Amino acid sequence: LASRDFHPLDTVISVGNLKIGGPEPVYMAGPCSVESRTGMIEIAQRVKEAGAHILRGGAFKPRSSPYSFQGLGEEGLKYMAEAREITGLPIISEVMEPETVNLMVDYVDILQIGARNMQNYALLRAVGRTQTPVLLKRGFSNTIEEWLMSAEYILSEGNPNVILCERGIRTFETYTRNTLDLNAVPVVKHLSHLPVIVDPSHGVGKWRYVTAMSRAAMAAGAHGLIVEVHPNPQEALSDGPQSLTLENFENLIEEVNRIVRVL
Ligand code: PEP
Ligand code: MN
Image (cartoon, rainbow, N blue to C red; front, side, top):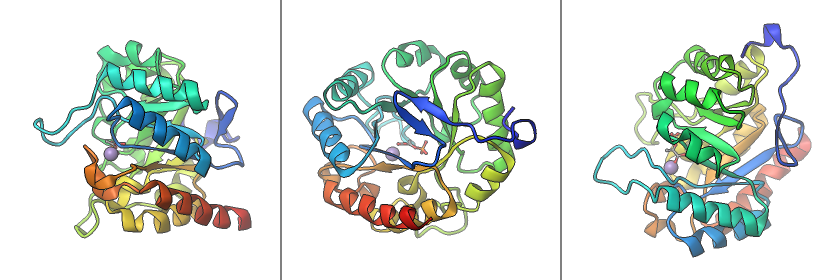
């Protein structure tokens, strides 16, 4: 079902009036974690002004340590829904457990499956039983074929709205948090009809390189980006080092649009 062989035309996924996978690039931006009500509303307004189309924010966080901030849970989803109410931006947030899928679909416009859950088949099946668009992140140790098979789990349950997201893989290089595998963009576009989005923030793990890799992702043919933005990255409760300030995000959009215009 994910293969181009049986579905030659590109899949375009509608989220409200937005189209993901069409000729217009889609930019998703926001904090790694939802941290506060006022913070979320402020970020939403600012990233919208800068040119973002969708607001991101984690309410249930898959942290490597159980002692790290785990997210605000449903309270965080409420803050995001309020930010959507005010700005009109659709929202995306990560779902970690099959049991919370029903709760999440009441709040979000796009369900995010995190890298750590790419092969959580019970979770893939559970989101496959909804019709809510799903952003499926590539696991950091998974091949492109395994990633497409995970998409297959969602599609085969009856949800055709799958968006693929390359977010970097583990290699021998440790200077960057991961190695953004931009090879995956043309490969996936060849093998599959599904839209492909790039997450340069987790891909490099350091804010300084995020804009360059965003430009590269769009030049490679990505349908859009998902970027972590925080008004004060040094104070962020998660992923501060890779988060762009609002000013840096405005600059990113300008630079990326310059590339997109000549494509
Ligand atoms: C995130 O988007 O904040 C996140 C946890 O991403 P990943 O699953 O790619 O690590
Ligand atoms: Mn993050």
